[in-house]
Length: 227
Image (cartoon, rainbow, N blue to C red):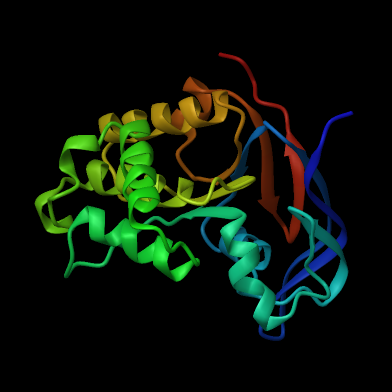
């Protein structure tokens, strides 16, 4: 019995009053790696925002990591986000503190209390992304690829059931994109589910996986042509 992490039925996604996507039906099971592709403006970001509670779900049925998106209350959103790891295109690291303190900030904000446990967790996630020795550095002292690795480490802090990566390689050069992708692949192999929005088709060819496409206000699965 595969475990469903995300299920949407007849969902419509709105950005204010504009219908962005309609009749969205999809299921993502635990352990899958799924791409979300589509042109800029096709609704990928609005789709992602609906999943982590930034945009309300008003039409259709949606469940994500056991939360009902339709009845999601403002006060539930932080708890939902603890079960999700979110990786943004622009890293969103706090510039005024070290990498360790960036991660500590997240742990404190999500209710961790014991210092030794927090330190151990920070070391563990930085180790997973190959950044264990860089914790004392500040974001501006790291390359873009390193900053994105830290952002992925941050997404892993609360052992998320689903990682939402929104254009995680969007600001990176091709070589660095591949490095970041390898990190995501490793995390997926360890059993984590990943939904990654991207317009980097080279990565799709290099690391083929289930692919959903946003186009013409619909989301549908596309079969990748093997080269």
